[in-house]
Length: 452
Image (cartoon, rainbow, N blue to C red; front, top):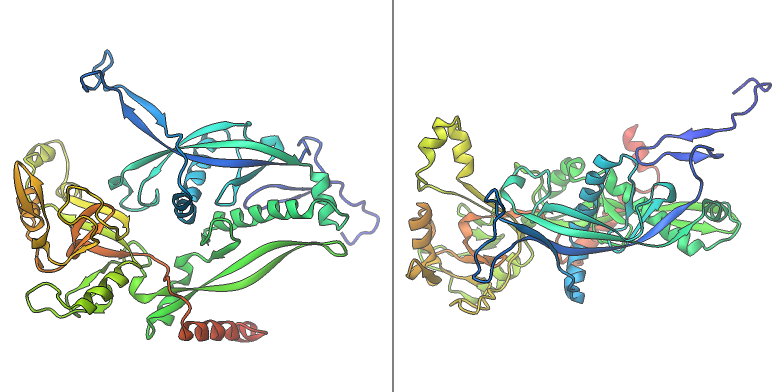
């Protein structure tokens, strides 16, 4: 205040979009510190209980009895690495926090994407607390097709490791010593959690690298991708730094990551077919269409290499009536509702080898014609082409085009669409040159000059 006779306030509150920060203390809130937790996420499921003959058990009302089962087996090192590099840990913890806030609005947890979480001690979860969490198996909970995806259950265990008093944190921030390495770790967890909270996207679980929300980059993405196959997505790399002379500060660097135009999709309304029948390409690889399957070995190799970099969505519409349509209309269901029920969607699948020991295509990722894969069905053998015709009333338009093994199931390539994916080969000369040009465009006062 300008009036020097007015005493300075004894309390100051700083409002943020995440936590309430206290300056100079508040006697109504315990000032104990930050509690650190080790995070363990285990697979779980609701399992149907059966008798010795394998018949499901039922309660007095006739409802099937299910028991919640937690799988205590540890994931392999490779499986753990894949899990932590996926969005699932973030989604699980986010869903857990949403569920708990409905029961206790003071529940609060910041997570680093791997095995560390922190919380203010006065609202910290109980030690060894276990939480049952249900998310969608292959898509986000707010995905337009989430209702078509299966539920997947997990159990999250939070084990308290130790607490850091606020006084210790304050001493480190003010440059008066303390375990700055440990406090840096805590601050970095908070920084990354805040970034994810604001809608940014995590690239690596324990890294401080995040990229800006895709919707906010769409205009930039489309401009850059207009005449280029590969283009940049921008983000930041934040980390806390402690100095004995200057206290603490956050170091933020601009970063870029590469996306591939052929492998990129923004927004649920944008659908990109893997097989482009107008330009005769599969995943951007030009193929020769002559009424038969792809036989050229070089082309096959290029197609498999390109498909291996993609994440896929599968979508098809059932044509064959189920026999329930008339009853559904009588019960008030609309034709649009019935049509939506006929649409089958499978999200975020990757190209994998067929691991079915009984499969005629065991070990293969791609079968080069829909006629070339058959399996047992209704007491006989049936090809994929005949299966979709008989069961769903769907006539495969391109029966000589490839089948893709996605998540353990075979799908005609005409059902497959590209989902969002980050390119895996972001190190060629043109890409390095593009990154340098990006940094040159934002260097110094150039951004300010653009605003002017």
